[in-house]
Length: 121
Image (cartoon, rainbow, N blue to C red; front, side, top):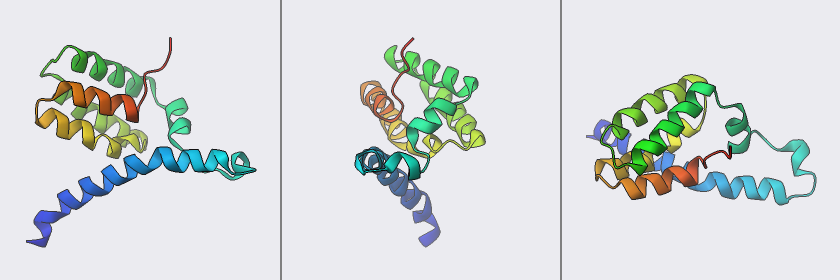
């Protein structure tokens, strides 16, 4: 019975982590001298994200904008790529996954925009 709750607990922890990341980053940047001692945050990983991961993010955004059911497969492939890269975003995309399970493309797109804003250019 407790084994059945492990995936739910992991998903909830992932959600909490995704929600706390912007707060932690803001706190790190607001402290005097924070830049010298700050640990790598989402911005660091965003800058270092592989070209393949960036292409996966762009593809997922486009599929979500088009309400395309292939977004689920694209999300799965993206999570695998991000996990292989060691990118913490892999665990943060559970909110996008839950929205896709409800076939709520708009909410999934909003969650993705919060977690991984599109790069300019």
